[in-house]
Image 1 (cartoon, protein in one colour):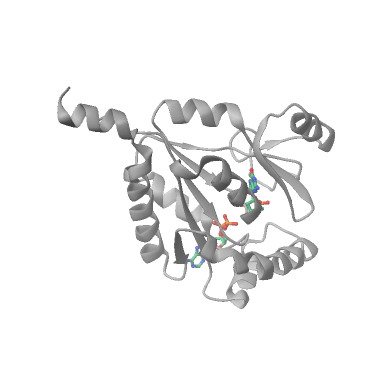
Image 2 (image 1 turned 120 degrees about the vertical axis):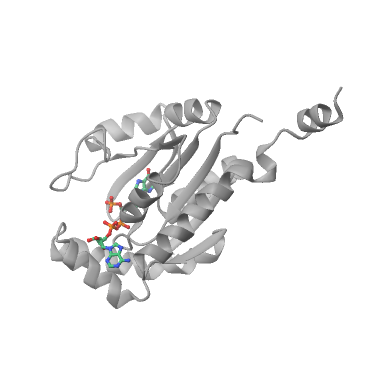
Length: 205
Ligand code: ADP
Ligand code: 5GP
């Protein structure tokens, strides 16, 4: 049977380890497409346009909103972030596992629009203190930016039960093995399969 396009959404406070965990996942799965978001925030050192994000000016982002380019968009930590619809549609038609790293607002929107194909996971650190330690240790953001992310995290955690799965990223090996399992299971969600077509084929006429 052909692989069906599916969506895996990862959310969790900035600094909990989503990007680190995804690198581990990519070593173990194939046929995936990471959704590159568009954002108005400044690139961090080492980030590349078109790889980590599409970095745009506020006016350009607002124009894209007006033109209906986004599957979802939200204001997070004072910047715009959004997922363009076109590449997602293409990847789904090609039967890929489409991976999103989006915030809790984006998750709610995509769930409402594409519930049948979505599997979601909320990831966090063992504690808020550990989150702060990781953000400081990562050394990519100013103390003002870190403070804002910590404040936001206190709200984001309240949404964890809206997700199918929950991962505490304490031990990296354990957490990545859990995420790999979820990425695999996302591909066999029963609602991905067209009911009438599957039954017809299975019956043999
Ligand atoms: P996010 O993508 O969620 O913002 P990152 O993947 O950038 O988070 O991780 C934030 C920081 O925490 C990085 O410096 C990363 O190396 C570190 N980190 C990730 N997972 C762990 C872990 N399990 N234990 C300790 N540090 C971790
Ligand atoms: P960062 O600036 O650390 O890369 O990301 C900040 C937050 O924005 C994270 O919670 C991340 O999941 C979220 N985010 C990144 N891209 C998108 C997007 O396209 N849409 C939404 N809604 N959130 C996003």
